[in-house]
Length: 180
Length: 391
Ligand SMILES: NC(=O)c1ccc[n+]([C@@H]2O[C@H](COP(=O)([O-])OP(=O)(O)OC[C@H]3O[C@@H](n4cnc5c(N)ncnc54)[C@H](O)[C@@H]3O)[C@@H](O)[C@H]2O)c1
Ligand SMILES: [Zn+2]
Ligand SMILES: [Zn+2]
Image (cartoon, rainbow over all chains, first blue to last red; front, side, top):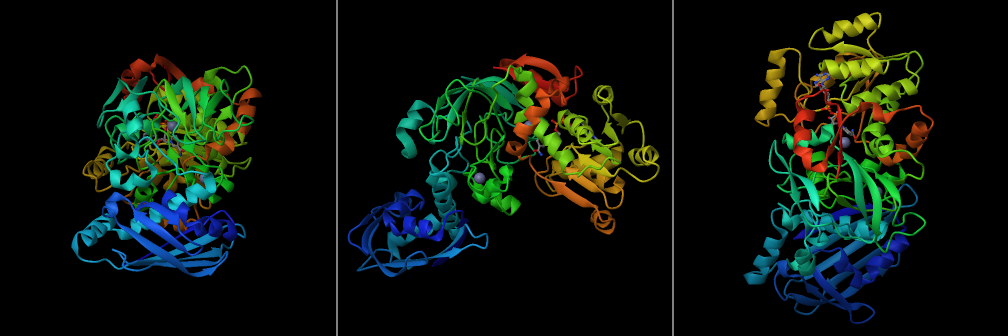
């Protein structure tokens, strides 16, 4: 499965690149990621969040990089869900923003993990990546993923429809956080 | 705290709900001193804007005192104790839309942007108390509200002006003003305004402030037309006269140079069978709008004129007079108000006495009587024009 998405962020290409190149930042806006840990200059260890299939982890390496312009990576060894990605950072015509063009490729296997991944992406696989990029834009332009009362947990917004009502969270809900 | 909530179509209910807390670093919590009921709330309560949920706190016109600020709000922008009016669109101040002062189209403040994008092609900003389509933010018909991007939107009131004088800077005064501003008014212009509700009244006052030669008010509620007339505008009752021929009469056959739709999706029609046609289509949800005012504005406007739409539409419209619009070189302009753009200049106009926003207030009620307030505002009872609620 190949997913593409794009957004424009009012930051310079070098800033957006630098944020993405620190792969440990990816889980702040990519819904399916729990954690990315850098294990070397070009290598990293990724783990996916529950909706993507429990305990899905893999190692990845950067295979292509041009600072400020382009980054490519792919999973290594025997990942449960072999995957690869590239992202290009292109100056926008306004002279101050950067177009971010992302391509993700998943080699969805059979079995339970494959099913969980397919279910996660649902009928509109693009929507997930579009929303990921919206959050990337929020983080880079405003400093944080924006939360509302109806969708207080940022990364889970879409999964939650119909949402909780647009009224403040109770102390119990706040305590439980996104696991509520 | 107490808050007025949506409780299903045609029903609001004041309930006990948790107090708001800071969720993002740039949030503030405001203790609300005054809040209002808006014609936009009627669209929500009447069930014409989708994605409302039971328990959603309503209200997007509010002001009060800052009682808490998040760690990301710097003290030179906002502090505890500040008295603020909060604009209804939530805007980040940093995206391309905000940079272009198109605050109600902010690209970052709607966590449900994916849904809005499906309906509108591109997403729009978050709005307080205005469905999950615009983010699912709790509204301001409550004792307290959480205000995101508190360092961008809220206008500090440092003078002695009363709540009533400044509250409407949150929405309807800027909205009416933007409706007039989009008309690019010239000194010779006759401006016709459909709707003598609160928004229409402010569109009329703004058209005059911007130099229109004559301002015409179109509605069917005699008391609302009287209110417009007392403010110096020329009333036309569409229940009593034919609007088009009356407008021709009032403009020497030219038609109004500029037309403002301050009615929106729940317009009624003087002719019962035309009203019934759109009512049925809207009821079965095969059309989301009842566009009588907009159709009439387009048909009435002089060739080359401007039709400025501030009444709210939510989805798809039937029988849009594209031929009149195209062949007669009309300009159509519209938008949810970019409130942040107008707050300061309009505050100055209030301070200078050029606009008196208090003239439309007919009722002041405790928050707990919100249900009664909605009832009289919607059904035009007790000469109700604008209700201020006190939490
Ligand atoms: N663009 C924005 O940012 C913005 C902001 C606030 C409100 N609004 C919208 O402005 C509109 C008016 O708001 P309001 O608070 O004044 O509401 P309101 O319901 O009090 O006023 C609407 C008025 O229109 C009259 N009307 C109905 N059908 C008509 C017709 N065919 N011709 C002429 N008048 C007709 C009604 O009698 C009523 O007096 C609503 O659609 C509201 O959602 C838009
Ligand atoms: Zn309003
Ligand atoms: Zn913005």
